[in-house]
Amino acid sequence: MEIRIEAVQIAESFNIRKFRAEFGTEPFSGTTSEVFYTLTDTNRFLYVFDYGVVVFGNYDAVAKSEFINFIKNYATHPIDLNLFEEYKILTDAEVQKAIVKDDYVTVAQIDAQIVHIVMLNTGQSVALEYYEILTDELITSSKHYILELEQHGRLSISKTNLLKYIGKVLNVKNSIVDNLYILDDPNLVWDNEELNMLNRRLKMNFDINPRFKDIDYRLQIVEDNLTLFTDVLNVRESARLEWIIIILIVMEIVIALFFH
Image (tube, rainbow, N blue to C red; front, side, top):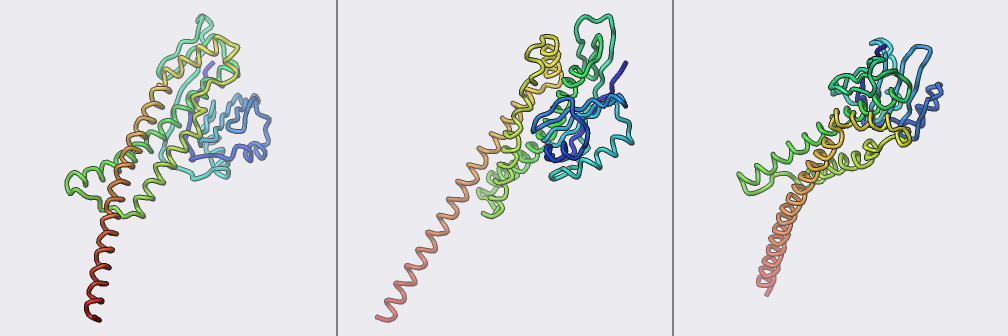
């Protein structure tokens, strides 16, 4: 038996509550931030996360396309970056413990809990890839301003554009912080050592924790750059105010001398 898994980043976020209410299928498990379905009549599995990721299990191209069109009704800021991750679950009655490889995992037998864990980690990997792209864009744009400082000793960016840039950085940072739970272990592994071991090995395979730490580190670099840019802008604004005050004083002196 084989289960084909594909995780896709579709949007920045989903309204899980509204989706669950209107999807019309009883989930196998779910919370306010994610929902997992076992569609036994079609041997399909479905996992939807509020951070904009959908994970398909045994969906063909037509069924996948139809569902994506449907769930976009519950999406905020759909994205089109072609972000996806493919994985497989294979069975071998001879194996004693799950064998995790780069693009597949082999287990003695498949059940909904195993599928749940594998789809969870595959979905997390895609979400991290999306945040990696966002942080790379922020790093690249900040390098432009740093190079300008190095070459010209000044920033040409306006105060309004700098504030927009700061807002973009904070928005990305807050989005990641809001989704910190993607690193949390699901409840079903707490009392099951085999599932817990599978979950840990999958996290290692997808480099979940190191990638998250790298994103956090790069965001800290961007925030440090923002502090520098803000200080430079404040100095520029202070110098401008000083010149305005000097001009006003000179004008006042000239007027006083003229009328005197």
